[in-house]
Image (cartoon, rainbow, N blue to C red; front, side, top):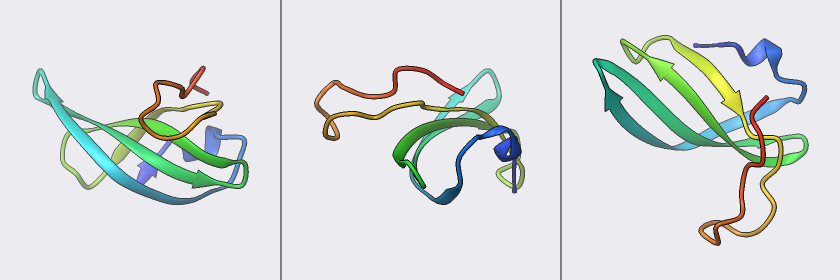
Length: 75
């Protein structure tokens, strides 16, 4: 379950390709998400891998993966 998705102003259909970083006992997960406005990059936090708190979802992901272009803001 991911708390905070209700704040997102777009439909999220699929979350995939997680990248996990442990920092001070907490886990932060950067991921890709398919939305009704295209793909976005997101960031969430978890302590137990059962519940996640959405920190933000990128506003725009122009350009191709790995080209340095990407999210210009988090909502």
